Structures are given as C-alpha cells and as structure tokens.
Image 1: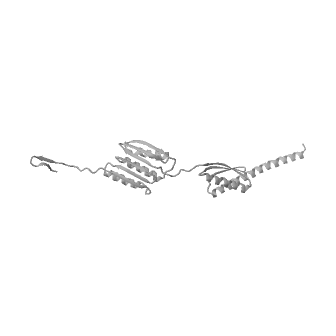
Image 2: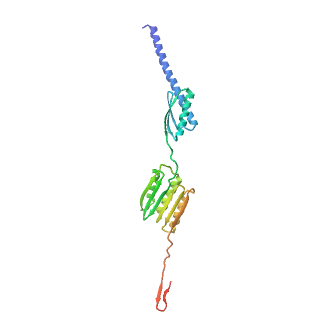
Image 3: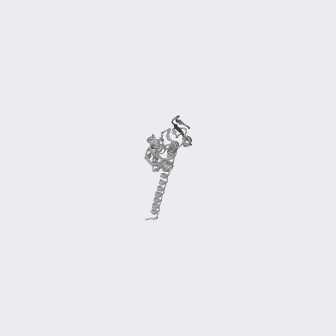
Length: 246
C-alpha cells in the first residue's frame, strides 16, 4: 500500500473516531440538558422530589406521588418539556401512587376495669398505636389482669387523641372499678374511686392532660367518709322500755 493511501486511511479512521466521540458528547449534552430542564420544570410545579432519568430522548420518572391526578400532571408536563425543548421525546412512567394515611381517630376506644381485670377494646388507629396503648395498660394496671381486644385501622391519630387515650387508661386503672370511652373529640370516664381524695386526684389529672379541644365528661363517685369512733348505746327496763342513750 502506498504511503499516500496509508495516510488517507489513517485520516479516515481518525475522522471516524472523532465523529463518534463528538457524537457521544453531543448525545450526552442533550441528555443532560433534557434532564436539567425536566427537573427545573418539576421543581416549579412542586414535584422536586420526583426522580428524573434520561436515556437518549426517553425520560423516565420514578418516585412516589399521592394521587393519580399527580401522576397525570407529571407525565403531561414532562412530555411537553421534552417535545418543546428538543422536538422529540417520550416519557416512561415508573411512578408509584401512594394514598397518604388519613388523619382520622378511631370510632371508639373502650377501657374497662372490673374485678381486678382491665379490658381494652374498640379500634386503635394503627398497629403502632395499639402497641403503645397496650404498653400503657401494662405499665399502669398495678397487678390487675389485662385483656387486649383492640382492632386496628390504617389511619393516623393526632398526638392529642393518643394523649387523651393514655390519660383515660391511667384514670380507669387508678379507679376501684370504672370504664372510659375515647372518641374523636369526647372522653368519658365513669366509675368509683377508693376514696374522695383519690377521686379528686384522678379528676384533676384528667383535666390537666386532656387537650381543651376534647369534651371531658366525668362521673366518678367515692364512698362517704367513715365516722370513727361511732358508739351506739341503748338500755331497756321494765319501767322505761327501750332507751337510746347515744
């Protein structure tokens, strides 16, 4: 092969390699530009946490969105961005729609103490809340047996609801016998305390711990005080009959 032909061949190869490298550089620049443009657009409309991956002219979306409407908005926005920026492009949908936990307290929670047995039933907002309330009973039942009949929902209760439920548990376990119900915005505690001092202490503690947004209804009784010493004296005679001395 002549020297001129070799030089021509080498030149062609070098041009080819250079063109390939330049082509890769251009493709990478296009991908980076499309990815950056897409992320900027998502940030503007409030979806900055969605993941954007670009391969060629294909934009892949991944991450979590709350509703199907969010999914539709994201896909439409990215399709528009890809086409308006480079004239072509498609969107691959790898999004996962997750419905958020609804903040809704359970319909009703029951706590009852009778014959040294504490029973809790009704519905807890979720498994974690059920375990928390069960642990509260275990901590405050003071030797009483414990029966856990709680079911669970898939919801999220507010901190104020959980605090109210824990306060009701503590109140019932401190009573001689009693019961409580905790609803969405009402706490009702009924029962009998060991004495007036215990009754007043339980009532005051409930009022301190339960959020003012809850209606607190209490009906806690206590035995009357015992008068001591108490002496009864009587005398019976033939002439006077029965006489009460004191």
